[in-house]
Length: 323
Image 1 (tube, one colour):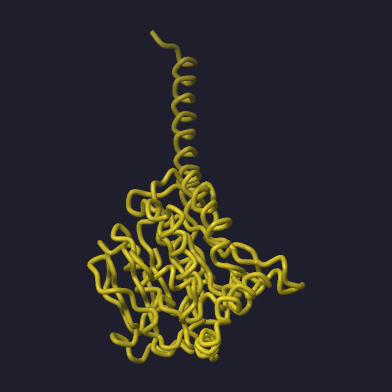
Image 2 (cartoon, one colour; image 1 turned 120 degrees about the vertical axis):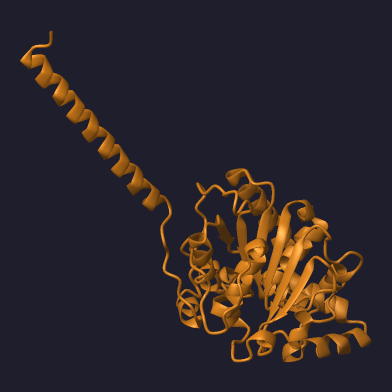
């Protein structure tokens, strides 16, 4: 028969056990909240310009402990444009994707050591073949190894829509990329600033090849490679230019002042290719080349392209879903 003392001891043990379970539940709830932070998502050029020379990772990107979920099995790699750092180009999209449950990664590529300071710290200036081979390819492998994923998704802006095509076509990337989403793409080169006209004139006198190689050798290859008529684009667009097992989305703005004409961003008519001119649906959505990576309407298209099974109607006057 239990004594009064043993009864008090049993009651004390039960209270302590209940208290311990309550503490464990509270800690579990706290840890879950910490593991899925909600990042502020700024829109517009302001935040990007603030970080234009900042080489750091944008909020939400490069968490190497992140593991993809069944809802978003492919980690997303963000590829910036010419002269923009990852912090500048992805100040909006990196936190937006992280809030929506993606593992997000980004890098700075194309810095050219042969250029004098401070130009040698400016991303995207160097030869895009070198960027694809020696920077993007190992970065993709690192992301796959860290996350355990089988393939990645790309989201690129400007030069970041062109350089990865070399990786996909010539460096084995076709087996490692599931989706390629492209903002202000330059599939067929640009005629802006007279570069294409100069190239045509040099070609007539037999100097175009030499001029392109000179640009590469002196550390400013990307600008020439993006010009309509370049040898780089000719190699990309020959044969099978777009891989049949990759889902491509090309998102353009009619107000692009750097991709001239903006229709240079059109991909081929194919089942795995979607071409979007934002103003066809939202005529009052006015943004230019650099603003594409922080425009709320354009980023709604990006979310839909990355998760087409759960695509939502684009709100011309709204913002993307944020988690």
